[in-house]
Length: 111
Length: 114
Image 1 (cartoon, rainbow over the protein chains, first blue to last red):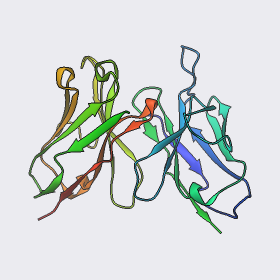
Image 2: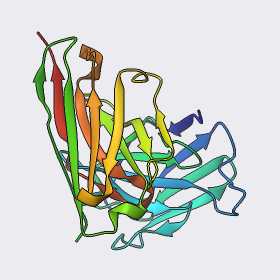
Image 3: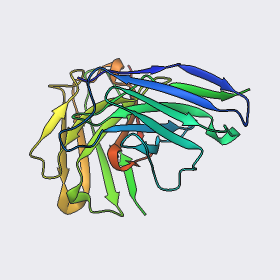
């Protein structure tokens, strides 16, 4: 199975400041179809996970443009340009190359 | 509007069985592969099982292989998870999901305890 490793595991950010989360996979997520199957999710307290980014850098419907994804191969990053109070929760990266696997999660809190 | 609604969770004794169901609506269920994902209390997300759109491909996490069975009924727009030989380590919220499409249910809590 592909192992996903996130850093850091927790973040404390002042509103209006940027935040960045790294995700590394144990194997390349570049598929033979040319797509890279890396996703970013946010799970707000008491809620189901919500998709933020699919295929490395495409924002899902309704996701604010302060969220952006980048990377290739095995190294990926989620950036929030200006953190807002509603961004609190746990962020997960997920790979979809074969059976899905998730990173450990990164807890974001507001200072 | 896409909806995935899980049911069938509850309290069960160690060694017991439960059958989870997931009712899908708002999208063409029969064309989507589906998964069960679980989350133990205070823990992260753990993939449990996968079934392709036509049920021809099925996979399980090692932690549930031989004990859990995934199935679907496309005529009823429904996904199922039969869980046998349950242990305390299976205590979790179980989500029905098609994660690549961003579709998740609200989850159903399974508690294994005597």
